[in-house]
Length: 204
Image (cartoon, rainbow, N blue to C red; front, side, top):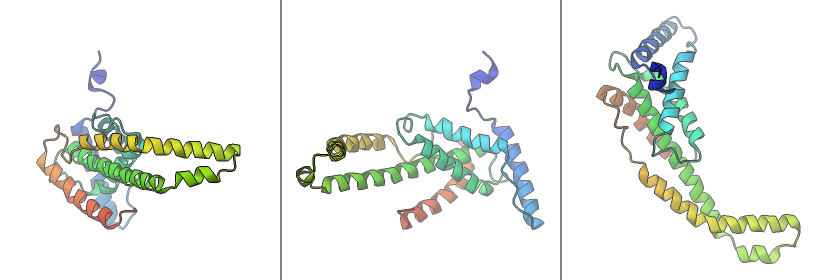
């Protein structure tokens, strides 16, 4: 078995990651000083963000969610948004920093999906199903719609219970394999403002 296979397709060399993001930071600061446009994120850094998101999404407390793709995209977006805040002078572990950013992006996506599910359940439960059935004109389209609504009502309780069980597995803690306190501190400095912003704008 080759060394590459042993490491896995989501493996990131943290030392190389640090070098690349430090190089990008230097180019960005130079561009800002010269009044030039911010440089584009390199393919290498983008691939690292994708690998972090995909790897974290396969962890046991995230793998069963049907909206994992959205979680991964949120994580990548947050990594790109807050990559400028990573300072190599304060931490030499970019993997820990961006994994933490991605982790909390996942939690926020789960909360958003939970709110949407709650809204759906409340709407379905508020419907007068008997009135709908009584007013159906017997056409094929109406019958199919009513059957769909009946199925939604029957499944609502089950889905809500399943979601509650999944939520119980998600605990607001950092992944145990992260041990760089400075990187975690850097990440949390950005995580808290993001959480406050979403509480002020629940529909965002």
